[in-house]
Length: 519
Image (cartoon, rainbow, N blue to C red; front, side, top):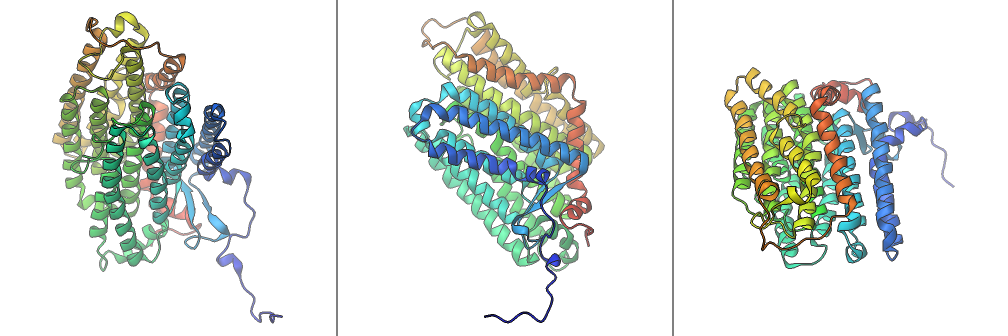
């Protein structure tokens, strides 16, 4: 029998001693609900007819959780939960601020729409081979990436959604899918390795991987530790994840190969996780290093914008066009990171909201066009206005949105970024943003003319009738695009709060370590 301890142990110095309130579980709900739903889908894997309904229900519950979380964050400030009752930095923390909570909400919104679209796009074979469980696992990884407060767990959640995305890429086992998945896996493995090396170096320097703990220790180590080197490694690793130039070649080699609903999820969500990681690490943890690298980031942003959209101009396959448009949008978001001002960062966050919705809708529009026209080639798609004027209306809205023209949502974040560039004395960066908008208008205007306005090509292949879910999915995404275009003030307000959240390191640190600020 063990002897009683002669010393009183003060557990309150290392552990949480108060019970967790129900509202606190909102922080982990966006991760826990998709995981539980995915497990349930595996339990009923033979009843494939149930998969779509269960996935939509799980994602809708996640969406409601995200709405509650964002409302609480906007009202009360960052929300933190540390696992296992251990206080940070001993326990693994989830820390939801306005940036992470808002991006998680928009990502879940587009996932709900994609799940509805998949009801007709994914057949029995695709369901049997696990489309919906892979999708739920991917969304758990995305939610965990947006909400984690720990660098190593950011790496873990990256791996979760990458592994599930591999499964979604090869679903169907066609030759082009296997080819695209191979390129995607190998090149993302390089980025993942850089991420892991950077995280190991960060642990060696700081002795912790809690982001708030690193942020409060960084100032005291800048004279003795290679923090600029560490920031460059993270910039390279997350730049590859975000598909920034010159490490963007993996995206156009793979995003045109999977089912169109999978490509819509990837194009709308995954690159934004890389941009989010850059914002979180470079602005919150390494602000002096970001300022030192701002010139390099600005040139990378401009090159990503212009080269990406020039690639779109050279394509004749609609899916490849959209892949390069995704890359160009990443460059626009990096412009705000290069500026580092509240207005620039708010423009980046607003553009991320817009891009998630607009790129998902563009890919789903491509799926609708394929169903109606029998292919993705711009040489054969034609005459859609005469046959399907509603599709033409959706296409016009989405072209205007992607080009940054009124009355769609893409206008306002570009206005914010152009104004921030001019205020920061970088007129060439503002010109690059405006030139990219012009080139995007040309690239997508060409697509619109060929597929919608051009008279029907007699010898083109015949398509089939598009199920109502396709039109409903497009309507569900075009509605917020138009609303954000004609009434942007609420979204601008959220974007500015998100920008303030990553610029205000003491508040973030104080939410994780109550009563403490940066050293």
